Amino acid sequence: MLRIALPNKGRLAEETRDLFEDAGLPIRARGDRALTASLGGEFEAIFVRAQDIPEFVADGAADAGITGWDLVCESERDLDVRLDLGFGSCRLVVASREESGIQQLDQIVTERVATVFPRVTRRFFERRGCRVEIVPVSGAAEIAPHLGIADIVVDLTSTGSTLRVNGLREIATVLESTARLVARAADADRLDSGKRRALDDLADALSSVLRARGQRYVMANVPRSALDRVKEVLPGLSGPTVIDILNAGQHVAVHAVVPETAIFRTIAQLKALGGAGILVTRIERLMP
Image (tube, rainbow, N blue to C red):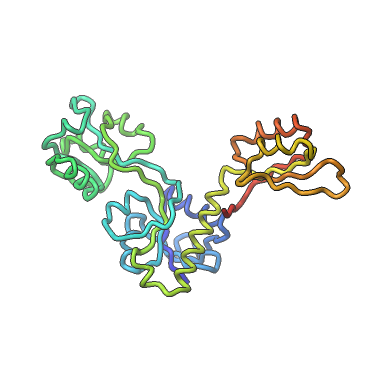
């Protein structure tokens, strides 16, 4: 049974829990504070801090884990990214005080830089030939310039609003981050064939849920004579599925996957082509 390290709190933990639920792997724990749980009876979950997950996976304490790409980069551990989960989106940015006059990276010379990500920050400035002094902090880096601790910060942001409220201006993006399913880079040699197959199955299950999000399944009865135009309305993954209807005469049934954002227009176009019995359903999982 694979052991999967999952975030123990925060938005990342909530979205991870929802993803596993949708994949048919509900988290079954003995209580809200349990440190381990069953994932649908197929895998074992251990709940740890998101920033510790790269270490747990790299050291073999867990076979795989879900954490942010920013934390993977900061860990500098050799990990294999099996899947980009798409949620937990944020950016690690360089920001300066509005009144400092610094608006570009080449204006940074020997400033002190406060950050929760000292390794990533050091690599970023070294690659650009900037000799800065890194000031590691444990949180709330945006307050550092106001306390005289540092002139520049490197911090996470989703919308940039927190930085602006604190009088800071973004001047560069260090990296963009989302949640990732990671495994030990040497797993091909370390895991037996059963665990390798289980890890592949897990990645497939999670990706099928992500692929289905934002998609809808459309079914309709349409005139056979209108099929060429229906195919333009319902391109689907590889074209609509066309099915003969018993005793339906000149009508056939068409089925296709359609983006949620296109549903309103798609239904209107099908009706204009003589479509009837139109049914739209949600998709739980979608395999290519």
